Length: 170
Length: 138
Image (cartoon, rainbow over all chains, first blue to last red; front, side, top):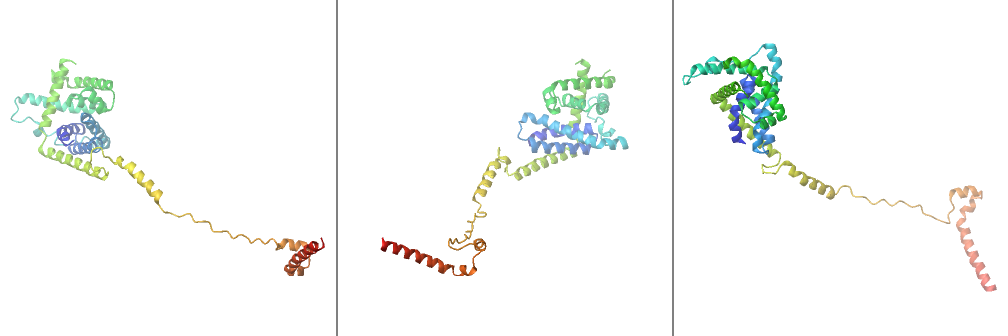
């Protein structure tokens, strides 16, 4: 279990951060998910750990989002300033193609903004299928829904992304 | 899935992987600490469950043993011994003694009852005497 968590924790943190827009909340969500997985599901087959972990994490992220949505609405979007730090997010000197790196960075920023506007289920399918590369079956297990629902939600989410991010592909 | 979709997915994945790889050391340390805390907390909880961390030895394993022990205690508990019922003082039946109600209803002189024992003795003697007389005359 320790090795499994070590292999997944950074990716999980980045996903939580992407969805929550806040570093500390992302850490808290990942820590809660770790604790719950270890406590409740360590006896389950290892093949189920990944989708189970992401299901727990998605629930925790959803809890955090509900908790902070009112705050955000009242006090505008107070995302972690480090996330939008242009120095930190800019390509380093070792980048092979700085222009391309910058373009990818702009793509990522637009993707992050568009992702936050999607319904929760579409966000989850995009993250699990697109970023984590999970299969339809694993995604269905992580989302606790049918494979048909995964395909439908993913198709709609990609349609939305095409319309928002199309300019980056021209 | 169009070619544009594939390109879009590849670029987004590349960006994500780049961010994972560039995760600051302080975040990695914090994640590692959270992982150890989760593992330790689960281990402590497992000990508290009295499973002692043995594989397949969960807290439920104690259920039959606990039930058996409880049953044994109930069966062997001395508790309150059933006390033999105290002997009820039976009224001494004296067939010869007249009851109070009979005395009052008889309307006889109370002196008769004062001499009752004598009359009973006399009756007994008289009967014996009559029996003796019958035997001698017969």
